[in-house]
Image (cartoon, rainbow, N blue to C red; front, side, top):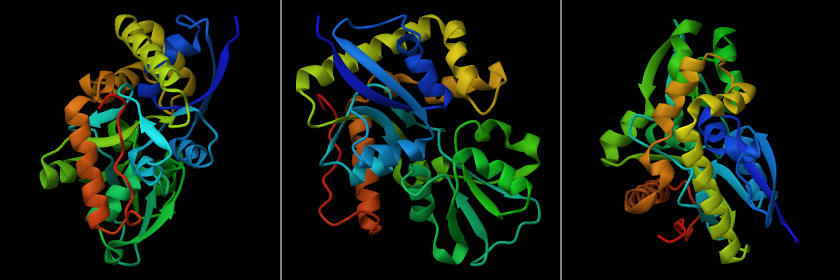
Length: 280
């Protein structure tokens, strides 16, 4: 039987390794598909999507909006909800104002977009760093503020850092909408039947992980920046929710709101098409 080989990119964060563990470990498979996985930092995934490196990949919805003519959003695998936003942290006594150095986890991350939506140049100079380098940089006093994602939400106090703002809360208060952080994207050039087959396979893997969370920890531990099982499962409880199983109408409205706010702020190119969800 001839197999179709697909290049799949996912992030190293626990919500992705949880959802994809059964596929990575070969517990679930499709005889017609050969899935070639690559696990990367979210900004590396964003750049890979822009370069056409993946057939299906996780990416930031900020990046996806810029690539909306090339990509389709899968209904499964998204990080979207209330209380899931990036947090702005600072080292104690850090200066504020135009001269403040603000670390963001990548130009095309939704975290970086949120900082730009709610803050001005008068509140700091943006520098980009891989997400796992931001907490250590703040501790070493190499920067003043950091827009932090993933496990940092749960561990920043252990590093002696202070919470300045929860950007997710700011988004929710401003929009009355859940925050769409990232999702799974498929290239529009893929045959529709193939895209649907991959989407169904990912849904099956996610359901398996919900039924076997202790086994999914194997992949989560292997790639996370934080190795405490309790923190890893807390991450999954927060970021893997009903919207991860199916974006649905709530997800479509949230993506529409993100597009509207980014366009109004001049952070998207003119006439950028809204993101489309498979079956939405």
